[in-house]
Length: 500
Ligand code: PLP
Image (cartoon, rainbow, N blue to C red; front, side):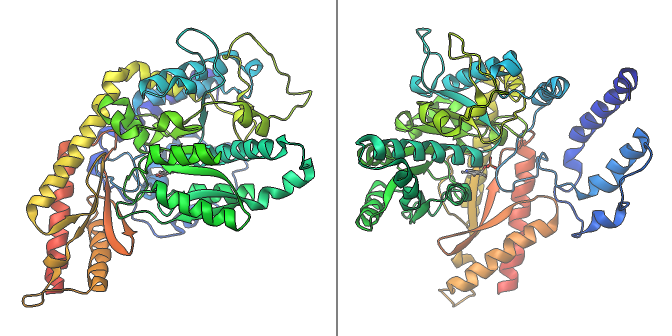
């Protein structure tokens, strides 16, 4: 394909993308195919001779499209949103154009420096403490800074690696423990999570080879200071070495917020690395009215949120900041002659390869830069506030209906609900068994998805089955949520009538 052919075909692809978005709400959000459908439609060898663009384009429509789950549909309410936007796509097109591997400054100076600039912009936009910025307000260089990871899971891993570095440094400081003895202590190191922490925390400990301690949350699904203190005491008695704690700002199941300042106190007293996972709800901090919920994050060692979830930026874009990069870069920096460093005078000259697991990295800052410029802070805030408004509207409608229970108060765009036990009770039967209520609510989420007009996922909260509605698709409008309410009510009526 030469440049003139690319010009023609590229325009066709842009047209196809625009058509897709314009018609997205006309199709069911969930793919209706059976496992293995594509294998049957595909040749079993790669083509020997070049094939035409037209043939591939046709296959996109006839073979790929039927198997796509439409995450960008306004009627998709599953998991957490995975926002896309046209400005982010345009930025990513430029990233594809340059296709640089920007692992250090020399590889592509603009790639490194734009990342540092936009991460400072974003840090300021969400009200992060200046400890997390690369360049302080007075123009001096900080030891902290931001980096774009591929995912919150990667942020978890690198935060734990930095934490390990920090605790080993402390253990070795008095000279009584040799390098080898200190390394062998890895298996005694313990990281703290709650029973609501995302699975990526556990995955991180598996990768690092340390222990993890899962702490039960309180009735509001929050990790509390008291529970953390008790877990640490128990582990210290057993000769373990506490080194890391994760607090979540907006958990996956319920969007609950851990005791962020309480955990900060414990982390400081016990010399733990304090990582805050705000993968989903961090985007809300672009709106100042959410800042009171985030008191204490200024005391964390690392903080992460995913603009690719709820801040209009196509996957992958996970924004992570550290208050001090020393332990991180000590843990991940490995020198080779073919990876020359260029040390400049400011914090803009970062070797981002030392801030992440892989060596190579895409020019992801471009799409974030496009989003921040083309929406502006005001546009980003409007996007967040509209979804919060929709979620609160849905909560009110469901409460007013009388048949539903809202499992946790709605704070962001997540509504967790179930058909309440009293609505499922037959006449004269005041109490319905919890197992019956659970079974009915499991069937409820299946029935909603079988309807096909909307898509959501069920969950289990401390033994109670519920339905999760995550509002936040870029194109989600009031009419999408009204359709959802209609399906929620119709399906509930059917489940209740089956019960009686
Ligand atoms: N943390 C939380 C609270 C999440 O909800 C999720 C995913 O939904 C993750 C981490 C994992 O995000 P990623 O896919 O970017 O690793």
